[in-house]
Image (cartoon, rainbow, N blue to C red):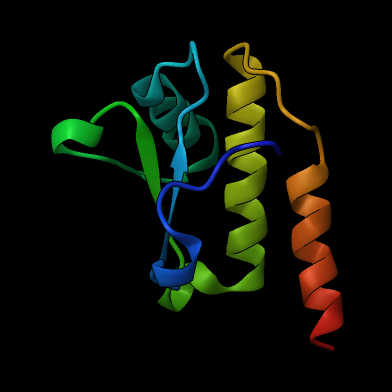
Length: 103
């Protein structure tokens, strides 16, 4: 999709992925669109990171294949609809590649 991971990849938690909000995008508008259009919720940041990153949980029910694919689709579509330039379809294809490797 072209989003950038926040933080040190070596020490990141496997249960939450933080990504930077693309330049010129209002993070709350994306979260609102994702909830309204897809029923998908991602978390905002707080403190000095407020408005700069999203926190995407991936544990329990949220970590199921169909839910991971839904979050990626919802995020990509919401970003596109709000004027962001993303690598369309790239995130879904990468996720599917990982699932196929595990078969």
